[in-house]
Image 1 (cartoon, rainbow, N blue to C red):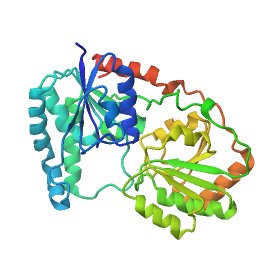
Image 2: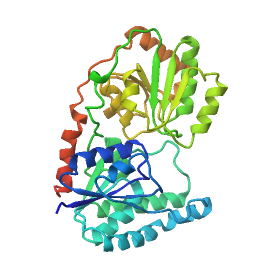
Image 3: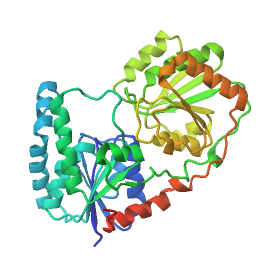
Image 4: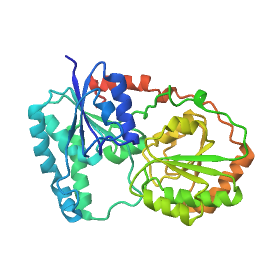
Length: 369
């Protein structure tokens, strides 16, 4: 009988960077481990069916999903609530060799109960950095401080996608920085299609959110389009800002130059036929879409909020405070001077086959702490 690993997601199995990391681990290591997952969403999502080939999914629900006031109150009592629910869950499931938490500060009650129940390997995994506009509620910050102490006390392993992400959740403790692996069979220079044309085709892949900053991206593209009227932009994603982005595209008169595609689109195929990525995030743990784009040889125009570990040689860093016009001008000048020829990048450090071995060691109990 294979040892069992319990994955605790940040939300559900929608298409996203964290979910892609989870699935890359599961696909490689399922021969050695059985996997279960706890999610905080309902219904089937992008990766649901695939994960169910490897294990079971258990749905933990918010108690007050439609009531903002009661949900705020719930945040203050979530430790007790999830401790009780998770303790009951472990009484009838398992035993587990490891618990791998991807749910940031809310990993605290899960790691605490996992320690009480004797799960030997307890992993807290941080995928992001501090938001640029943090919440101001002092009670919330006290709660976060409490959660952080609980995580540091009860986890056996601290993992992060970058040094900055590690510092955000784990302060100055010893952290394993593990690259977000990608499947180099799907994302590689050899898959790119080299076309001779005058039209510059930009692409952006990411959840439609304030963090990913697509509304600013539209302003940048508008300015660039004013200089180069045949340019095109493709957006791939989904999220709460979807309708707002659609409205802004129409307001800017860019309907014929911007295409919006759903998050379940074939990203490698679209990267293959585009020239450059624009990625103006407000903050970012690493940015797996950037890694995938560079693997396929694309030049990437990114904000300075992007971690330097994400630059594999094709990132051009720009300051958000410079504004849309200067971004567009800088992009235009770079392309005029350097061209957009796709380049081959050494991707060994992001190869899932190598990175999965690090997780294999962690799951086996070879702790770094």
